[in-house]
Length: 456
Image (tube, rainbow, N blue to C red):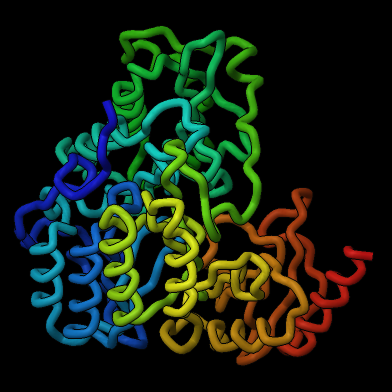
């Protein structure tokens, strides 16, 4: 049976507009119901189930951003949206978003709706199973098990069904990846890591997926002390063998820990497949992807894209972990027209453009911790680069804009000046420090020189 991933399905079902703040716990993390202050106004983060938002909901977000804020909307590296620059009427904004069906089942569950899927879940020709029904079960458990509301707002899970378009490098507290062994689809899993770098601890039959996740979350909460907010904190004191031993007593199936599972490595994916035309499992349909420049778009642009999805696609948008979006289920013959329209709206549809792989945090224009205006500096840097490169500009050491280490990191040290790092697996943090206190012009010259030497 084909499961449509549209509003009304369990993954994106409209919820009641209950917005009681009494159940919200203190946190610096923004949510839909918790608007946190910044230099440029309040921030509201809208968590999208599976990264999916309907065109009607997207227009509601655009209208809310225009009415209650400054019209600035961001695509996050967790496939969510957030509104910046919010004024005094927080309640008005929250009510508008809740009325559009973008809120949690209850206020206490908003923080824990942290499950990442492939942007092409259910549509990808390489998928081993349709991840959406299992994702709906997991999200339902997160929202409706009161104990899970104790999890940190940063505690996150990922579910990879074998798609060819999937983020494998973001670290998660629990990651799950599908593998096919002897004709059976299993769900391999790991803790406090990612499938790009780590091998599974064990695997279970696909049918046990929900039970596995619930068991892992309950076990974490049973074992963790108050200071253990993330899985990595727990694993610093409790061995993975002990975790697996206890987990096995909570499952109705045996954990597979043989070499075929623990020696398996999730195959890598080709880069930049989220940009441009992406083939779907159904030959007559494609997804059309475009990068949101530096993760930021205005309300008018979002409304244009939403209308395009309504007219040329299936009436939905899918946000991605690359701060981009997809319009799925576009007829093949309309794909070029859609891509042209996205480009006309100011989005990036070619991986060759300098901004296609560049990310930057809010910087000093909107964050008190930012030491430089990173977005303005990124735009300046892009104008001088001879080739597109994966560059991350960070206003401080927190690295908010990048969930994994980029090939090149620029760490701000003062307005317009950065330390330059190159990723190196042998070095922790951002990698190898190449140079200190560079201007944007000097950074561009260094990156262009390296690009030319690599080509030569």
